[in-house]
Length: 423
Image (cartoon, rainbow, N blue to C red; front, side, top):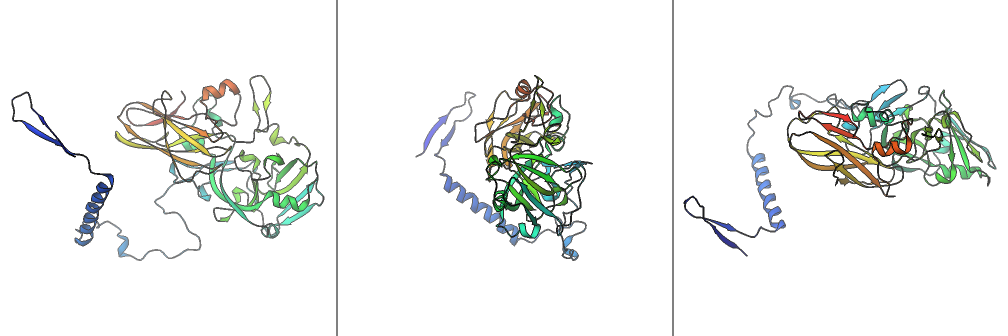
């Protein structure tokens, strides 16, 4: 039904009649828009190209392309790189798409270098409080039913240098010790059942084959259903820096418990208080006590674009993008603030949304060229909400290094440059 009204200008000009019509329904609009786009596409295909737009130096249609290779490589025009130091490397989160981290860009952390292990000679010993001590070859482990799952791994020291002020410049420097992969292997429970555990076996010591002989004590009741003994990552054998030929995966737990180059599982009745769970991977509290066995990685998120070290070239539409994750389960929601936490709006989560896995989020925003502080805040399915740094310090003090899951802030200057700040 149409409505007609008259508007009479006060300046004496001729009357202008403005007709207000009911807007067309959404289906009709989409059909019409599709028709217009289809006609335009057809005209482009039928019209002879000018040639000028396609006349570029090194035209790939003029020379034969490269031949097939035995192992694929990235285009030389793509420059995503890990940020490396002798004992670790950091994933370039700002350069990635989706949730799967390419194996070559997965972060790494080792305590005495990456060992070179011949899989034909590698063995896994299962002993201690069991009825039958067992030794498995890699071929024997691969005969068990295989299972795969997508899960993140995060070093508990991720963002650790931010406790006493903003240190890192980019999202890679501050948050790059986390990555997500598809992991394939055999369930830990399947292997342990072969050894017939004794009733008093409630913990397990996992030991690696690296020069540090990395060890951690693991409570069995909390990992029985989820733990994997992995031999593959993203569809191919593990990379050496990821534990080739065998590693332990405890989804959602701090990375140091996911022992790489796994060679021994000893079943015990209590934690063995090894070096890695006493002098390391503990948090000194304000009262002088230490937090210990803080296995799960708490809910966390970070805006990856725009982020520190990047620049907005012009005002206008910006899609704020980032990653969220929680060791306690699925991401329930992510809120975004553009005013340093004074107000929050819910972002859109991008499927898939999996437990103990990176989840993509995005938020549409119009930047008007003013100073702004961008933040994201994750809430997981248990109701736990990512805290501010101030809230974290009130509970933990400033002597911690591990498990810093505080809200990250990026400040945009009027010139469009972004930097790491704490508010």
